[in-house]
Image (cartoon, rainbow, N blue to C red; front, side, top):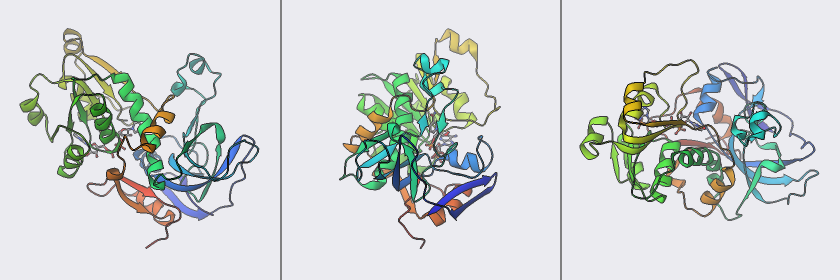
Length: 333
Ligand code: NAP
């Protein structure tokens, strides 16, 4: 079968490898769709720890074609929660499973979804409806991470919520905030993504802090940072109103520092939170994608073949792209 593997920093290729055999407790999944995430590009550039020779892809879904020694039904469509927590470390024992020190991430530590087939732990596979558009299944993982951030932010009806960054995470945060009954503003630079934000539920879309202040001079009750750049992380607490809250979902490179003014945060009692991965949210994400409550079709910029995946991961996303989805059945050209 074909699989897109990272051999070293800057060396990613789609190669022929044997179809994996499911180990005990695993099923074999015929991958239908796998999203290319910023983390895949970070892994390629050596900005995120990786394991050489592994198949990348942690946002994927497909059909169970071999249930191995599990009771899983063959032929069902599943979405894969890539994080397998140990359940025994101190953090797991406290219920903080996303902080598990032994987390095994499919698509990083073990072979992932940029392949025709993937052997996967049955306990982390969540069933999706047979009638779902197969490409939509790839959005459950980023939605699960966004749900965790929005749970932390605890949006309530009538609040003003600012989402910064109009990528997949931000555009999903906009939709979740709208479902909570909030007035929602998306701040992102490109006109295409502002338009996408408005069409997926934002009440306002702006490209700058000045434009935001024109509409909400006091700032937002909740700021959700989904751009993952130091400038927006630094500015997020300033855009929260007095007594407001901030949730940072965006990932900055390890070691990067950002100026924060504790005096301002203290005197205005602005709460700052950080959100990591998808603890216990994958099932809810699958439900929201399956019933169409969260619209994912507008977030699909293009579908590509496995043979085109390596180049797509090695290159910056084209202007205006939200998500490229690898469809293993698709042929190049
Ligand atoms: P993405 O596709 O890169 O989207 C980020 C968007 O932010 C870009 O589309 C860009 O759109 C916008 N942006 C960049 N600089 C900006 C600025 N100065 N002001 C306003 N907007 C700006 O990324 P994504 O997949 O949506 O993910 C978002 C972040 O979440 C990333 O850092 C990712 O690593 C992180 N993430 C975190 C978790 C977690 O568990 N915490 C999980 C998944 C992903 P414009 O060009 O329109 O500005």
